[in-house]
Image 1 (cartoon, rainbow, N blue to C red):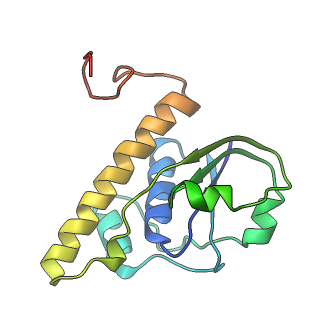
Image 2 (cartoon, one colour):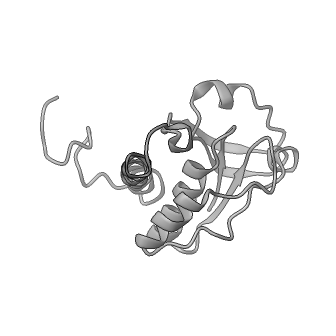
Image 3 (cartoon, rainbow, N blue to C red):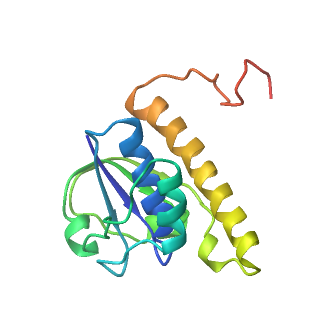
Length: 154
C-alpha cells in the first residue's frame, strides 16, 4: 500500500497526516511531496504530535518530480482540489482524493491561541485520516455512511 500526500506551502498538515497513518498501521508506505523538497515540520507540529505519541521530527518532503513519476495506490492533496488538478502524474495513481486542511502556521495571535489552533488541526486531521483509513484501506464504515458517529439521516 503506497500513499502520496501532496501539499503546497503547508507541510505541517501533511506530516501530521502521515504520522496518523503510521499510528493506524505502521506498515503503510506514506510519502509527502510539495514544491520544496526536504522541507520539515514546524517545531509546534513536532511538539504537539509528540504529545500524541507520534514523532514526526524526521519526516521530510520527497522530490515532487520523482514522486509524480512513481506508482501510488492513493494520492491525497491536503491543499484542496486545485493543487491536485494542476499536477501531471506519469506514474499510475489508482485513486485521488482532495481535502482542504487548515494551515495552522498562518494563524496569528498569541502563543496560547496558536497552540489551540494546532491542537484542533491535529484532531481534525486525525479524524479525517482515520475515516479515510477505514473506508479506503480497511474498506469498513463503522461510523455510518455519513460518518456522524451514529446511524442518522442527515
